[in-house]
Image 1: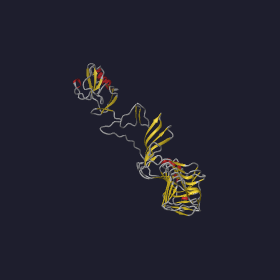
Image 2: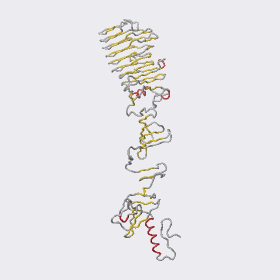
Image 3: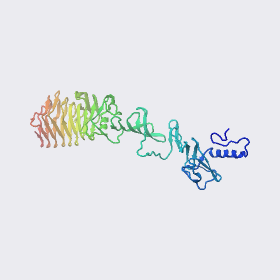
Image 4: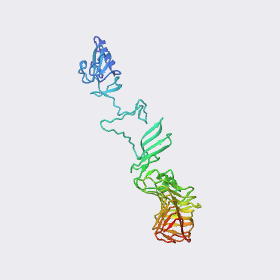
Length: 468
């Protein structure tokens, strides 16, 4: 039988030992030191002044004075003398001066390693889902020499990796990869209904806005699609059929939320009839776009019918190109298209059906013929210019079917307006006055002659009007 215990080296009482209490008391002294081990400090290499009996310390290297040669050992003041106990690997001690627990690794005392714990609560309670829970006024994530990254990883594209901001544990804002690899930011007022404010496409880096916070900058031409039968105004309108908008008004609103960056923006209309109880007002240009193109079916314009109770389009800002559509209204004298206030309308492959009037421009508005057009029904006039309106129609063909009748005149130009109508080809015939020029307005045909415009009644120029 050995004289001491195997683990702590406590002295055994030997047979026939005299003064057995000495051995027993020594064993109790060691146990009293080590059981529920608590030390005051672990950073001192000299005994502190004013130490009291029973005070315990871990000796910091290099031990000095009474502690010399006892680095890392546990020093306990037993009466007036320091007693030392050498630690064994795995022993733990609580350091009251630091409020931390340390473990002896066989060479030195180290703060307890928490790298392999299942969960951790810091001033809070963790659980099986929130394995790390922190209750604190702030959390500092500092660098360890240079930069610092916070990484949030997910297993698959359809999973979520995000930062969620809450009020009363109810979601209010979220940013990250939510259900796909696009980066998005969304907000909620109640934690249930969410509105996406921004999305960055993972493949292209293109930015799209769910809400009008700032304008999307285009990197190329953009086409919005409109299909009243299949479209949905809640979508993005960027593809035909089910991906289209349901209304032209929604497509126009989408163009006002972008910066075209110098690229053309087109609204592509599906075949069908579009009814306008009130005019479609286009009073501002598309930011950064040379023009806005509204295009129907250029091969069969009659398949895209724009039917108004009054004017169909009022253009008072920027250049709007109308292509591949039939324009008509039920107004007694209002045009299907009106340009004003420096607004410009460019026309190509447009058919003009029954209407109060076909085209008008006033107060610096401009009409431009960029491609062949046709007239298939009656109106008071084809072109009416007044109050400084202008028209530029050159080297194009205007086809008239069924001899449409113009009750006022084929072209009316008044009050300082200017019409440049040169090298036009009119196929077909019409009835009514050919032209009416007055009030210092000018119509230039470059020698087209008095019968240049369609009609069966001679034109007139009076009150300072000039027809050339």
